[in-house]
Image (cartoon, rainbow over all chains, first blue to last red; front, side, top):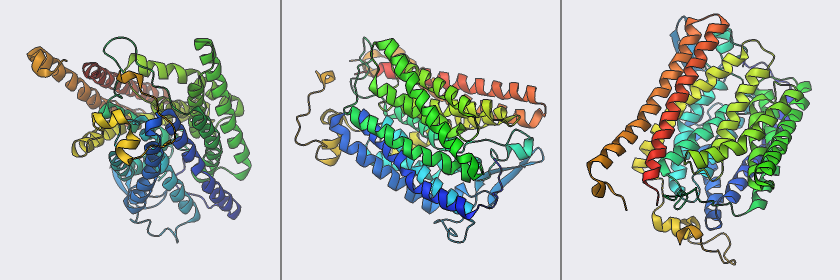
Amino acid sequence: MNPVSPLISDAAFALTLALLLVAPLALAGVALINTGLGRSRSAAQALLGSLAMVAVAAIVFAVAGCAFAGTAGGASHIFHLAGKPWSWLGAGPWFLGGLGVAAPQAQLALLFELLAVGLAAVIPWGSGMDRWKLTAGCAAAAVMALTVFPLTVHWIWGGGWLAQLGANFGVGAGFLDGGGAATVHLLGGICALAVIWIAGPRKGKFPKEGLATALPGHHAVYVLFGCLLALVGWLAWNVAGAVIFLHAPLSALPGTAVNTVLTAAMAVAATFTVTRVRFGKPDASLCANGWLAGLVASSACAGVVTPGAALFVGLVAGIITPLIVEVLELALSIDDPSGAITVHAVGGLWGLIAAGLFAPMAGQFIAQLVGISALLGLVLPLVYLLFWVLNRVHPFRVDGDGERIGMDLHELGGGAYPEFVIHRDESYR
Amino acid sequence: MRTPGSEGLPYILMRERQESMKYAGLLVMPAGFFLSIAALVLFPAAAPRAAFVLCGLAVEGLGLAVAVRGHMEARKESHP
């Protein structure tokens, strides 16, 4: 990506601002999907948790995170290696200082990032459902919004070393991530993996003998309606990101929207077919995961590929999603109720690779691989370390009694469905 | 119920090996990242640069596999 922001026209500014006001629908969709994929006795805590994560992450990012994220062309911490500048951390003002007098492009970028940090924080919350304490989740969101999120945002969107790969090393146009496949989804998926490793599986998920116990989501309607909401938000997110971070002209934006829809559509069609062939009937929750994985993959590549390539990206995302969900649960003993690792981490990874494969710029594939390498090789261990320390200070996992009676009663004192009898969980017999 | 006390020294040693596997895997991953960075600096030509970056990613994949394996075995022991 070009680290220096060109001037943005008034029309593009107005359109992008309007799109960003719709973008939180993606967040609402993901929160609904997470809630529906959890159990009924934790539904209120799951949705309240999503709200709390967004709130905490936005506040922490506005207070301090935005300073570390910086803006393209703004002040940053730089070291020199092999005669090249490596901008590794932003040095902007705290408390969103100077927002009102910043360049229009920088204002839009900050708004985009403020919304993106909420989405990134909600992703691991879905993976820790039914066992992750609300306060611990908020603390993790705060840590994320203060450390790893601004770091990756600076590298990719804030004119950092990944954005400058093209200018410094002649590697394509630098690392491309218009819609947040890396900064939001891959990062969120990485955080989800760390949370799952640290908090452990839900009680009864992996019995000593036999296969993993199926703990199906409690509300397929939430999940599927969340998918539809997410589409609206994703369209806004990808198109706005194309304007802000890829500097796409207005004439290129319909193509970005078309690619977003095509990728998701092909992904859900592929997942529908795969689950139909494997299980005899299509699986609603896996189809939802496939749809979302297609959207996540489109975040990286919708602005830079052709519609034909978008269909291929969706096809691959839709085929691998149900297979990886199965491998993670059955072969690797990873208890991920919302499928965040598959959907957000693997979907994001595939989208970033596809952007490198199908983007017209020469050398783009290497730029994408270097960005992926930075996130997996540096950010994953860093996130694990931060969450490990946080878990020592404030344990993630609720006690056994809380898990037995459900997070709603244990943490909130009341259930999400007080007029309904919640059936007993068979795994506790 | 298997506990460290009831299983004795072999169990404790096994747990320690699993713990060290987790952290060893996570420590290997940054090495892969530095390989990728080295590729950018050392190789101006596209082919060797791509090959070196892929090697870095392979090292990261290896570290991730070891970390996953370490967590997996630990999980087996903590099944209810």
